[in-house]
Length: 504
Image (cartoon, rainbow, N blue to C red; front, side):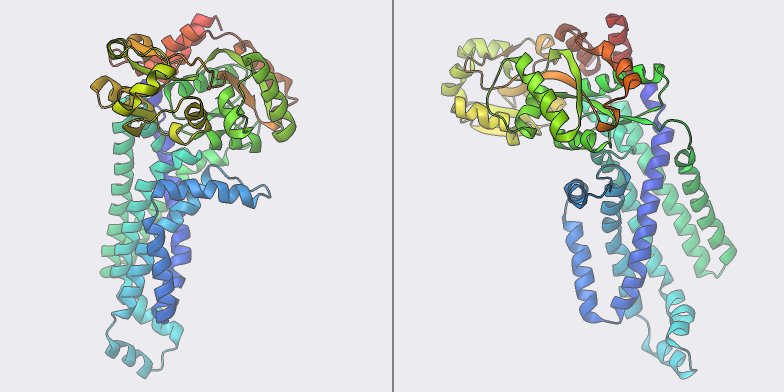
């Protein structure tokens, strides 16, 4: 756990840098737009309507939408990381800034403006000397609101591969490491309160015309933000290797196992956790992620759009050929275990109902509640299973993987889409239902490298010892060390345990 908490300062710095960059960009766009809109009612209606519309889009969805948009734009524009997060947060920050300035300018006393005209002020002089100072308190209230919103929403940038305090929150939720969740929340709240306090100090000082205090407060905020960007200045040598991971315990463990080997080989490593399946593969194909572990069945169905279920070895060879030819991605090899989708029930419940296979489940499904992970109900594997087995559950509810097992244990779900390498299957004495029609393809864990490393012998040599070395029993034990309720370990500690057991 200490390994993960040690990441807080670096994540807080990147979190602050992202939020302040988005706020500055929103100010650069929003202030002139609001001044123009305050004098043009039709433009104001359009601008405020558009900014309000953005606010109706859930922030997580807004962040995710920029990924395919930037992919479509191409021309080397990064679709993951800082840029999509910056654009989404900027849009989110616009409404309070624009609305408060427009409202403030429209609410000025006409007699004051007439007096300014009467003494011969130009439009620019009137704006600079009269209007902006009068509207400053209202404008600052909007800016402070935008700052707090932006810092809060920046936790979601984890989903598009931008490091932030959200890394701790998402990892903590998936592994039930509540210390991480609390650390991430407290860190984000502290940043929001600190930035709001500095902006409030500047606001009060401006109202008292104490400009030295204004510049002091803004200077402190700027200095802290610039300091947060210090890691970006560190140039020279090899660039940092980015190891990707999806949003569950096994992925966090394997990412740290890979990262540890690369660091021992002399590479500098950073991590992009919490990526969705489509995002992760697109990221390695574009070089935004250098290496990550995916599963053969995921590539087979979601990327290759195949519906057949060949033998596992043939499937892995076909995937390696396709990823190399179509995306330039190198499949270094299978790690040695499979993590397939598997339907699981509480053992005593399955025995009482006489259910051992998916064929048995078909007749009982209308009386049962189904719990799935967040992706499964929209994945082609679910469609393939329904074609093979006409399952019609009484209810189907998506959960995060952690809470899916909780739902089964508590009785809120009767059947779940479990993962075959999950240590909780044996620990919770779950019954995995057989798939006699082989509707689900193989899910060998495979290591994928970006096109930049296709001929990188040093990089491949550092990772090749992992190929074929991890039996499913050992992976289950490593997963359970993170997922269990008592004596939990961090993914970093589980990765070290796994490396020791493998003799690496």
